Length: 292
Image 1 (cartoon, one colour):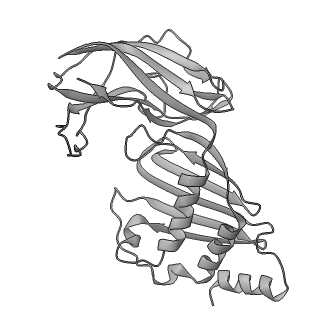
Image 2 (image 1 turned 180 degrees about the vertical axis):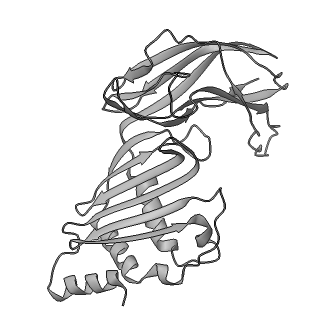
Image 3 (image 1 turned 135 degrees about the vertical axis):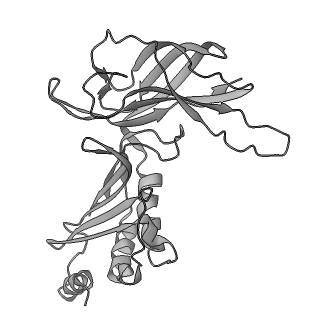
């Protein structure tokens, strides 16, 4: 008999509350590793009283829709019970072990139930061709994406374009902390970073827009921008609700197409900063699209 199913039956036999002392952690990591950090990462933690927190390092879609940061939420207790009932049905029993590729996400689920620890690890490749985990994954992804929406600290980026030519772009970057706690990150291009940091222009040919036709997203090339000063502290600290600005004046190594579309991305990799003694946010945040 599955150990988790047996634990649930013991709780039921003595009339206990399965949510008492319950702790859940669901993690998804993918991409390259820089130091101790993986490029794409999310961590969802939920306790038996429904309190939840989500850390998101970087959205896999390189979009401006899911910024990195820490988020809080509240999970309805009936959904927690549905989650436990789903695990009790042993959905992992028939999940395949398809070989993973470098692009697959590594998923892990840890549950503390009735003082006993249970864990499962699998890859996104194992989900293909099977619907056994669909209900479980729907709950977990729904909690993170739909219910953990209160921003504790997060970055939102905008870029005001001053001028562009085929080989040059100038403007002002504004990074806003949309949260209730201070957030700290490495200044773009700071030396000693565990991974590549800096500003990157994602640019490409603008999609053709016709009435009644949804244009395809532009396929971006990436250009690392220079032309900003490092005369500021290596660690940028933005209090809750405040803005950090940076002037950009960069010569591009390749000509922009005409018409063109772009996004500006701020890449920074975090961890514990020894000198400042603070936790640094690591991830990437992207501006809304702009261009000609």
